[in-house]
Image 1 (cartoon, rainbow, N blue to C red):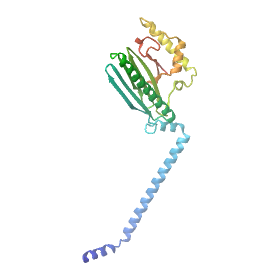
Image 2 (cartoon, rainbow, N blue to C red; image 1 turned 90 degrees about the vertical axis):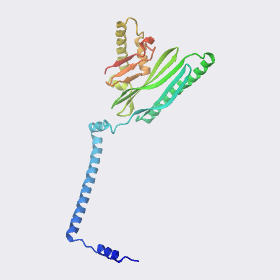
Image 3 (spheres, rainbow, N blue to C red; image 1 turned 45 degrees about the horizontal axis):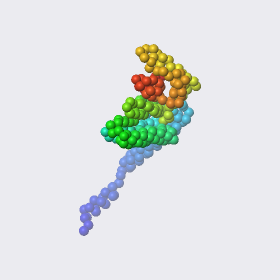
Length: 272
């Protein structure tokens, strides 16, 4: 059954006529909104064009944008696989880090594959040696530890130290460093830190030689016994260094590499 009151109310609502004044006000308001939208849209478009042109023609502007923390590559280091074993006097703790964010993915894959392979080899060696020792001497001590230390992590540089400590009677320590430019996502080499000096290996080796000589003279016994040629070869082949918070390179030698075990892993900061 139809509701007559409802039908009359509906008809009255549909026949409402807006006054000419109201129509003009609504029309003007609509035009104003359209105008504002067009201005805003054209402004954004102009800004995008200006931004693009500025990047192309202004190295200073581009450099500023590159240094913005929201626009630079995000280079990070993550903890990957963990291998932990403890059996009587035999213990292994191998942490495999993973680096992400290097601009050249081929280099990133190469580094991560290198780190992973190193970890796999450490684990394989430990399992082989531990099995051999179980057969012949259940009281023998065997230990392996591999982990990483973030040496520097600022707006420009990520430097990490992947170290390996082997313990069989006495201990030995080895280091592998990776230095990443966080502004470009590229790997930093020693040569990169001496752009205007082709003889950078000679500069580094001579500095370390003098520093070793100074420390030897101040010590009651000889700390270092390597020659200049040996230093030059080690620095050249290993490229074992990290970049500290001051932006200086720090050359690092493994335990027993340039002196007795008492010297540990000597470090030499080269102030640039």
